[in-house]
Image (cartoon, rainbow, N blue to C red):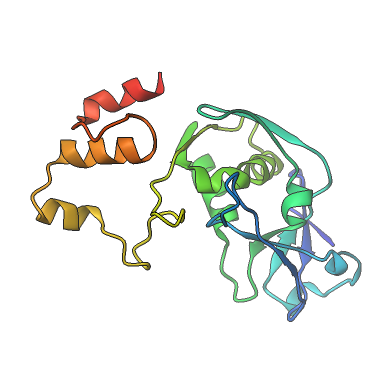
Length: 206
């Protein structure tokens, strides 16, 4: 265990190379696997006194406790980062900074105060709020997690799965308003695929 950046509450753990972690994938309210699945640290590295130069991987210690926030669409939420993922991986064994760390630092550097993203990332919110506080951020950003367009099997649309993208729709002659209208219907914002302009979209969320 080492202390990093004096005055900032990060407690880093050298993560032993080859150390196995327990995979526990988080699912949404429909039982589907979220894109931002996490790996729960076993906690064994906390007491192994791994030398700092033995590995490039670093985790930040997550103590038990709730993180409460109000999602601008979904309302009040409570998450426990320790129960979700254990000690949070900041840098992997190859020396690459993780998404969880990079997005928090980037939002702080750019003074982002509202984050709009898909609901598949909802479960990352509590750990990102806690990490930002440990890094010195006093007030977290507000979060709005929008619904996702899913295919008939219930999985979210994906290029890797061959789902049709905006480029294909536009090439087929479908107008931007028609694309937005179809998307609004598929996520439950309207009952029919009526064309919708970009200026009309905020009205769906008021």
